[in-house]
Image 1: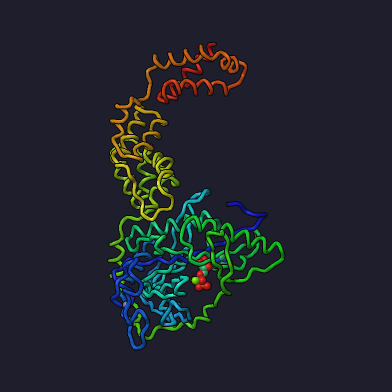
Image 2: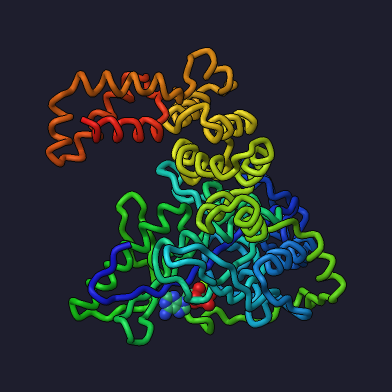
Length: 478
Ligand code: ADP
Ligand code: MG
Ligand code: ZN
């Protein structure tokens, strides 16, 4: 991102993740997404007086898994608190959350930046219940859907360690990856199972941190990037104009690409937090924590280390492959089928990723892994050149097919025979005395022009390295 003068950014994220439990956090209502409004609620989750909550054990286990996967310390003694506020989507007028004794604290994760690997601190992870949803329409006004009331969430609060929009995106991508690998949430941003609040302040280099604003519920990587860029500029311009930044909650409007003030920020004491008297404390033993730890599968960073070691990939490239589990699984399966896994990785990152829909919640690669591996093998063995490899990939992305057969049928094999290549070179030189003269007069670009014509003549199939050698030699003999 672009910085203005010497204004730096400080950014911390609060990420809400909906847990993939079958039932809600304090009752047995189902959590299925997209059901008819108000068909998945009961007296408990709609906050009827006299009802009592019973904590869903799976919620605790899932939250602890998230904590273990992000290097947190797990609390042996933790409790739930009431956060009191009024809003029409919150029938009880309080949300059961955790205040001073969260389940997980002091964690971290690693991201790749253009300056290398960076640690981002995780302050805490706590469990809480989701609120309902307000639906606004012209005919009926505002309606309330309570299906989401009581859906279990974890809130993951980061330290203010993020310094650019790119780092914020990388952090959320890594967090999403870790959580998806553990299997505790599907993290679908378009269905709201992963939502981000972005806290941002600016200050001049060397000065203390500025006052932060909080942008609520940002639900795509593109919007995180844009909201940060916009809010950074807005705060700098306000300060430059002599204004003071007030701590407030702002709404990011993606259509306008602007943030708007919503309300002055509440302080914790406005919420009158107190321990929920209906819920006993959560006690964890070492044995139970250990068992949860053992149930965590291989995590993204461990896979990343494998790729760097086994396949010689750069940290940056390895990160690109591990961030989505289906892609990492695909890469690993295909890599077993070729002697050229690094080429395979490059093809996936530079060609395939450009074809896949950006930021998709559910990646599906429409190419058989064996076909992808076959392109890497043909490319690595020199059967086809790199531009044919790219073309093939695009072709089978549209309609999957065996690339080896396509190469045979369409005669796409690379021409590496020096006798044949020499003929192409000699013909091109004879046909283009102007470019030859220009080359001899010192214009090296003229050689590129001749090369382009030769490549076209070979139907794009000439071996570029060999052709280059032969052409340079021939030109220097002229
Ligand atoms: P609140 O409940 O007021 O939102 P939290 O502690 O839940 O407070 O979250 C505060 C978030 O703001 C954290 O992610 C933290 O990293 C971030 N933060 C704290 N100070 C600053 C600052 N000066 N600039 C930007 N972000 C900040
Ligand atoms: Mg907060
Ligand atoms: Zn219920």
